[in-house]
Every structure is written in structure tokens, then in C-alpha cells.
Image 1 (cartoon, helix red, strand yellow):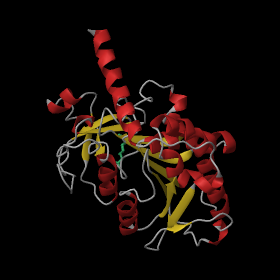
Image 2 (tube, helix red, strand yellow):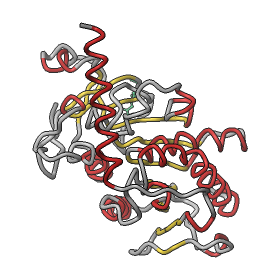
Image 3 (spheres, rainbow, N blue to C red):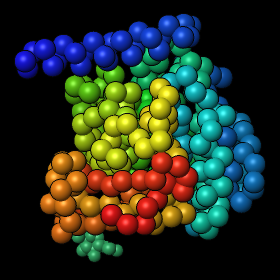
Length: 304
Ligand SMILES: *[C@@H]1O[C@H](CO)[C@@H](O)[C@H](O)[C@H]1NC(C)=O
């Protein structure tokens, strides 16, 4: 029975990999500077591309936190959650937003994208360290927010910055961090709590996304698997960014520390620590947190 279960899981994982990889098949050899694009905005409404050598001329507000966004596999800077995330941070009072486009390496086979992660991460890390040096904004005020493979990308970015600067970035938020090929990886080769002062993850799909807890706080909305209102493939995996950008302007995702979904459903965790999922989480707490959401926007229920 135990063996059988493992076999079925593996099959599903490889099945997912195989199907998805068949959609796009392309390969690139190295990570060149030209492959990577960085866009920025703070008070302005539109993103503009940061070109090399321009960093000291960006008019960055010293008081703002730096929010760095990364898409995942087969995605790019037009990723549908970048704009509303930026809009909500501007609505909330301001932040400097840096949006990464690494589609040149994220656009091929899933396995190819994974093999590029560290090289891409080194490029991103160097860029962020340069940004920090030029603007004087400490790395502890950087918050890296990555969807799917982008979450693990930021794990490598955090490691690289630690190795080069001896400093941790402030926070990494994984939005349904990728599952296939990462579920049983050594923590040093995926996103882990060692990669930032605070690491939190929103789990929305236990197949495309990783099922295990890999942060200081891991949230499991609707059990962390199929999301309310989702029918088509990819919908649950893509819910995490939607929950996250809503959380930037909402304290309605009330969540409670709980070790299992069944305990949560049976009310056995009702007296445990509570906080909100996403941007405004209480960063002193630790563990797995459960909650339910609405099936469409606004997703927050404002109640447990
Ligand atoms: C955050 O959690 C800690 C630990 O439970 C608690 O002492 C603190 O009051 C909480 N902070 C807020 C703002 O709720």
C-alpha cells in the first residue's frame, strides 16, 4: 500500500512534467545579461525598464520597501499578477517595485528551466545587491515575491546574497512554490527558511505546487489543494498570486495555526494563534496556518 501510494504520486508528478514540457520545447545555452530584464516603478503608474548603468538615476524613495516580483515557468513580465500587485502596493502607501522577466530561461522545458535556476539567480542577486548599494536601501528591506519556480529562484537569490554579502534579505514569499522535482530536494536546493529572515508560502495546489511546508509560516487556504471555484488545470496554482495581491490591501484572510486540515475542519485549532495570510502576517509566528476563502474575488472571508 505504501509503495503503491508513492508510485501513484511519482506517476502524477512525471505525468505533469511530461505533459507540460511537451507544450513548449526550446533550449538556450547560457545566462547572458541580455536575457534578463528588470522593470521598476515607485510613484509612477507604469513600469519602465532598468537599463544597466542607470541605477543611480532612478529617483528611488529611501523610505519605501523594495518588493521584487518573479514569475514562474512559461511566464514573463506580462504575468497577470504583476500589475495588480503593483497597483495595490501603490494604493497601500507606496513601495518600490522591481519586476523580473527571466522568460528567456523560463520558457522552455520544465527541466531546462530548473537547470537554469542558479545561474539566473546569480544574475538577479547581483542586480539586487547593486540596487541596494546604489540606493542605500538595506537588503533587510527587500521582500522577494515569487510564483511557482520563481519562489525557488528567490531561494537561490537569498543564498547567493548571503554568500556574497553575509546578509540575509528581509523576506521571501513563495506563491505556490513549484512542486515537481522539488518535493524531496535538499533544502539547500530549494526555497527554505535559511534563505531570508522571514519566509512564508501560500500553498494552493499540491501537484503543481509543493505540498510540504518550506517556510517559517506556510498557509494552506482551502486545504492547500484544489481551490474553491477552480475547475481548469492551472487555476489552483495561479490562485496564490491572486490571494497575495488582495492581501496587500486586505486584512480579511483570517488564518489559524493548525497542523492538519481535519483538525482545522473539526474546530480543534480554534484556540490557536491567529494572524492574516499574506503581506500583513504577524512575522513572529511559526508553523502551518489554515483558512478558507471565497470562490471568487474578493477572496478574503473576514472570518475563520
Ligand atoms: C504577533 O505574535 C506574537 C506571538 O504570539 C504576539 O506576542 C504579538 O502580540 C503578535 N503581534 C500582533 C501585532 O498581533
